[in-house]
Amino acid sequence: MNKAELIAKVAEVSGLTKKDSEKAVSAIFGSQQTSGIIIDTVASGEKVELLGFGSFGTSERGQRKGRNPQTGEEVLIEARKVPKFKPGKSFKEAVR
Image (cartoon, rainbow, N blue to C red):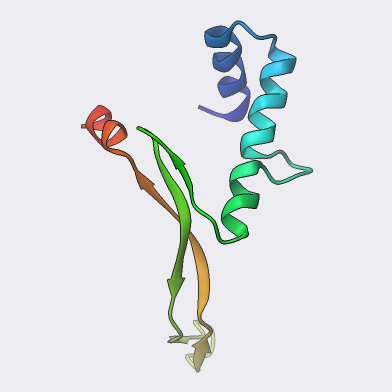
């Protein structure tokens, strides 16, 4: 399912117009011009928890050694934060 299909499904289920559904989906997930509520919240260091769906947050990835594939030279990869998603119980059960 792509974003256009998601917007159409939200409009169908909620009874909203496609234009209003697009605004809602773009506010939550973002669009090409802006980041959404979830991205902004996680980027600021907070968690987003959606009961039954899952939670979005960040995880720390430590400093490590890597290799440049072209030269084989060893390089140091700095520590950083990465986005993380943990599915909720209902989500896991629905997928099984």
